[in-house]
Structures are given as C-alpha cells and as structure tokens.
Image 1 (cartoon, one colour):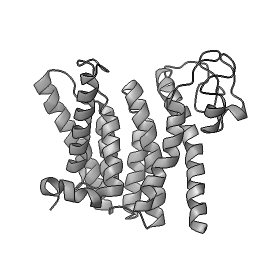
Image 2: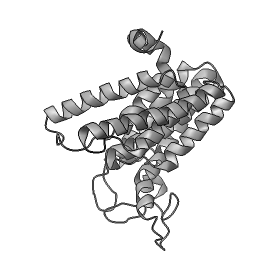
Image 3: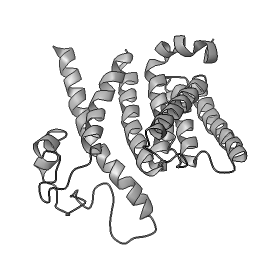
Length: 268
C-alpha cells in the first residue's frame, strides 16, 4: 500500500509540475522577446494567467490539471475559444513520464534527479518544437545540475560528467560547423549545442554517440513521415532539440536495455 501511495503522490506532483511547465512553455519565449527593457512586468508570476483570446483571468477551478480541461470541454469559460491541446498534453506528460522513468532507478537520489530531468525535458521539447528556441534559462541550469550530480557520483563520476559536457559541446559544435560548410546554411543552433553539453554532463561521454545517433534517426524518420503526408514544408527548418532530449531520456533511463540494440555500433 505504501508503494502505491508513493506512485500516486508522484503522479499528483507531476500534474502540478506539468501545469507550471505550461506557464514556462508559454511565457519564457515571450520573456526573451521582451528582454529589451519593456517597462511592463511580464514573467512567470505576473500578470496572472488568462485567456489569450479574451483576457479573462483564470480562476482556481479553471486551473486544476486535466480536470479543468475536461469540465470546460476544452474551451474558455468566458469566450468559448478552444484551449490548445498542448495544455492537457503537457500536464499528462508531467505525470506519466516520471512514472515511466523513475522505476528504472533503485537509488532514490537517481530517481528524484531523473524526474527533474524529465520535467526540464518536457519544457525544452515543447518550446523548441513551437519556437525553434532552446532558452539558456533551461539548458544551462540542466547543465549545472548534471555537473553537480556528477560531483556527487549520482549517475556518473565528476570526470565523466565534465568530459561529457565538454565532448557534447565541442562535438556537436564541430558537427554543426561541418554541416554548415557542406550545406551552405546553418544546420544546428547554439541551443542544440548547449543542450547536448547538458546531456553529456548527465550521461557522461560514452553514451553521447548513441544518443546523437538516436536523435538523428528519429528526427529523420519523423521529418520524412510529416513531409510524406504533407504536414510540413520540405524546405522548412526542423527543431532538433525535441529529438535530442527524447534520446537523452531513453539513454538516461534505459541505456542497459538499449545496449543490445546499439551495442555493435556504439558499445563494447
């Protein structure tokens, strides 16, 4: 019974974190755009949340994760405008992804850190997918948390975390320069490079080639499928961060399970 209570508590916490992540995903790119000295305060706290269409301020009962979306039938209570699918999806992922990842770790510190990693990952994934921006306000804290965990030997030791961060940054930067020279246009953003450095701090340097391979493979497949069904312009740039962060989750939680599949290429 005690174990069930823990999982229920984690799910409820994940729903609340997911609700906050929606605020981060919506507001952080706007905060970056307004960083030119606008006098009007706009941050993660103020102004209070409201409907983007009519400006109606959300009440407490409008902010209950998942439940409010169901009771409101996916529409604003004031003007009837449809609420984006992203809001309930992020809340659901905030609860379910930690439940999927945490059982992979017997150590409580690793399990707690993995949940934090997943919540950062959700915010990065959706911001980059929607804006093709990976904010330093997310990637750099993720990097430093990874290095601090390395100092404590939580996932990898300090040398592996430092070398992983350096290899992630330098390796992807070099790959980006090479691709830009070959294509005649930028192929990777600075945010991708910083994110890969953060993944290196969490994973160490050894899983990085496999992580990059998984990201490239899934990114290529997803892009090809969307283009095949006419869901995207073939010439439009593709956000790479979502594929990097998804591969990072897989390698953090399920590296041992991935080894038989990737072993001949990346592991000895």
